Image (tube, rainbow, N blue to C red; front, side, top):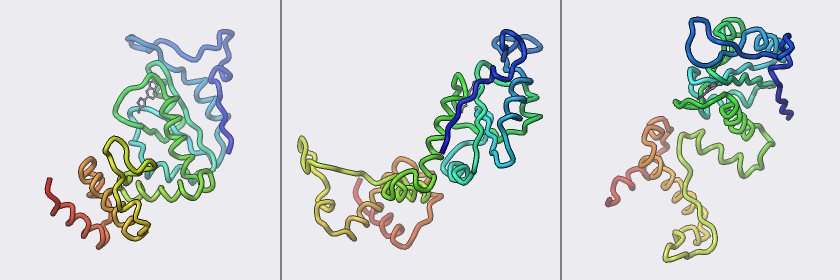
Length: 212
Ligand code: JCZ
């Protein structure tokens, strides 16, 4: 894998290497100029390039999009600053526009890093087997189960005894139940998307039966 950062100013033609200008119609802030952006992207994109633009107007980035992008040969991220781009950038380059969430950042670089990090960990062989097995968690629309490590007791807070039992089947079932508990409590919206096996339905019934 190779990560390359490009400077838009390399595709300017004036001696000040100008990439931004004032918006037609007036108003605060600056807009990225159409010529350097279009020329840069045309120079950098090839037949196998997936071209992405990070902005709050994009479709929402999540696990499904990350999986899709992890299969691509070449990703090209266009990161704006200031007020964003001359609209003709979108009309000419037809980017796949992506948002990492409903908040406004100062530029597209941080969103690009977020997308890159989420995508890179899904590329086969980038992380070890143990970590990639955890892909299952969000793939199944569930939050992770709680984890503990030594010591077995700290300030009166004990590790759940089942985790010390050595009974792998009981541990697996406990973890699944706790993942369901967390998801039900913190992100019920995810649970409604999750595939529920017969075991999940049993575990959810157990949670319902618990007091509190
Ligand atoms: C350029 N401001 C690019 C993207 N999800 C999200 N929030 N904020 C952005 C973003 C903000 C920007 C630019 C100027 C992306």
